[in-house]
Image 1 (tube, rainbow, N blue to C red):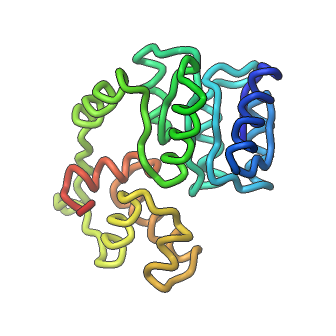
Image 2 (cartoon, rainbow, N blue to C red):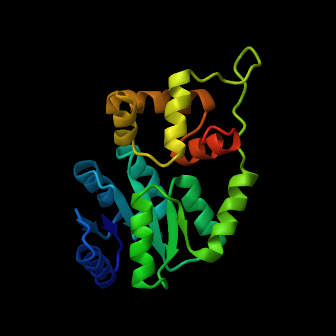
Length: 211
């Protein structure tokens, strides 16, 4: 799905994706509409502009991932400001590419995003990695003062989430239902007091669970 409020840009991006063999399930120029459409179309990848006329791209990311947790969001923005990038990543964006990127760079970024890789404009990659380290997640202790304990299955699901696998792929790997995977992820989020897959991935990396 392509979300951008400039019709010519939006149509051009959709055309490039289609010509490269991707199925574009929807295009829109408004954030709230994007969330509603995502609920119905279940896109694998959302190419999203940061600046939209109704709500911010960061709000759209949160809404999209609430509706379609498996979706991967690639920000495509004219802004390369550090705070914009960090806000998008914290909200759950998988990658961030500036609009000055070439068509080839854009299509490669979409391919890598679909594969679960974190993709960032080269001069922003170090910034994002540094922020991940700065925000190293330490879960709050339980009432008895001990760190939260994950079950063996929750740890296994967390490891696969950190590898960039979708819920559907995790379900197939473990021989369990998509719904069961979602339940494990929600339980893990609750235990660790986190909000999205980005935070889970950061936690897994910091604690060596992603190997």
